[in-house]
Length: 245
Image 1 (spheres, one colour):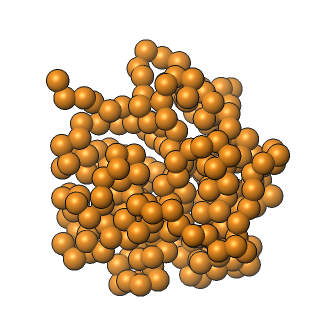
Image 2 (spheres, rainbow, N blue to C red):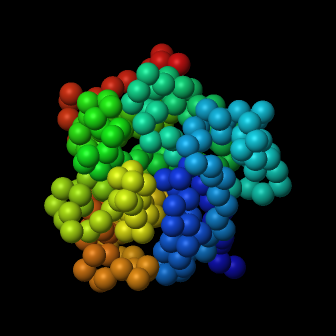
Image 3 (cartoon, rainbow, N blue to C red):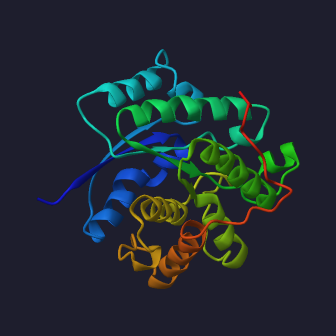
């Protein structure tokens, strides 16, 4: 009998925009003849600290999923988009530690979904003095730090975004608010996550989601560059999570 993989997504609007888990990730899997059962616990602007808190309504949902009869193979963790690189970084690291321990206790494997920098002219970039590039690398470094500390695989979706944004800006990855993903952005995230979990070469993915063959090829190639090799983070962005709470 063909195996079904159970995948739980925990995150906010960067995860649920365009119904990414169920309408894109799952269909990518189906196109590759991988059977997945997808569940998503998502809430706009929610942080992993709140998802880790059983007294939070969404945290209670996470607790029920992790302690219920259903057994997950993979649990994808996506943090609020700025939190890992602000004064709240310690809360991010602590929440990942909490959730990873609980996830592994069930026999599942946690996967970190490293997000992207805001689009140029986003007020957030001006507020913090970041650029799209610096925000991207700061996020990648923060996710790598906690991923390295806890031996958790990291899907560097943000680096795939940066690749496309820098080299093919005719492909619109962002929604009008300059932060959330367009359909193309959600497709890129789903391709990257699927590749990271199942070890599939993104350029072999057949599902295009209605995108042109050329655009889907560009997105899948960017995912391959970000996911299928260990990215070299510039030394000025490298950080450590050790001892930070």
